[in-house]
Structures are given as C-alpha cells and as structure tokens.
Image (cartoon, rainbow, N blue to C red; front, side, top):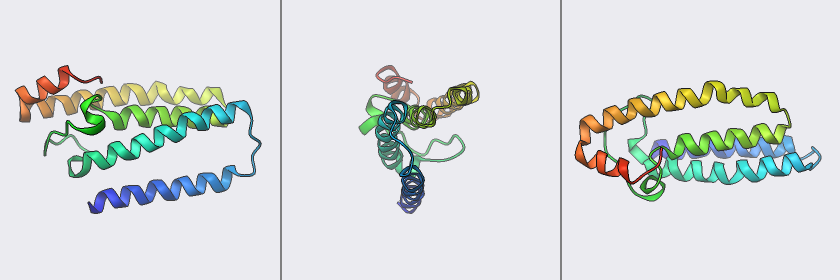
Length: 137
C-alpha cells in the first residue's frame, strides 16, 4: 500500500504542477482535445496502478495474477492508458512531431508486455492462458 500511495502522490503533484503551468495558456481546440484525452487516461492509469497493488514491479515478476477491475478486460492497462495519456499531452502541446515519441514507446511497451507474459505464463500456467484469452493487449 505504501508504494501505491507514493505513486499516487507523485501523479497528483505532477497534475498540480501541470495545471499551474497550463492555467495561463489559451484554450484552443487542440488543447481542449488533448486535455480531453489526457485527463481520463490519467485517471484510468491511476486506477490501473492502484488495482495492480503489490503486484507492480519495474522488472517482470510474477507475485500474483491480477484479473479483476481494469485487468478483467485489458492485460496491460498501465501501458495502454500511459500511451493514451502521453498522446493527449502531445496533442495538448500542439506539436505533432512529438508523436515520434511513439516510435520508441510503443515497441518498448510491446517488448515489455511479451516478457511479462512469459514470466506470468511460467508461474501461473493455465490460469494465465485462460485470462489472456479473455483480455486485450
């Protein structure tokens, strides 16, 4: 629980700093679309991180198999909503060439998810395979 609270505190501090810095900027269509994309993605990212709880680790480990909440439909909601959040921020900035970040980010996340899948399948076997068949990415 301590790690979840630390993660939540970091995200909240980042959000407050973002709001303070963004408050003086004009509300263009691009900024509204970007924020409309980034804000719900950030909330879902926080929910996914909290639901993962103690199973969260930087390196691929298999402590327990989380299959409830967002994880009932998406195997890697942190990656999915993290990418959507970054896309929203990039749209918000109005600098399209920043989308090149995804040239690095997406393949990296796919490789990480594959490594995690191997570790989870080794540890949980049929339970992981059954869950994997019912979920996306």
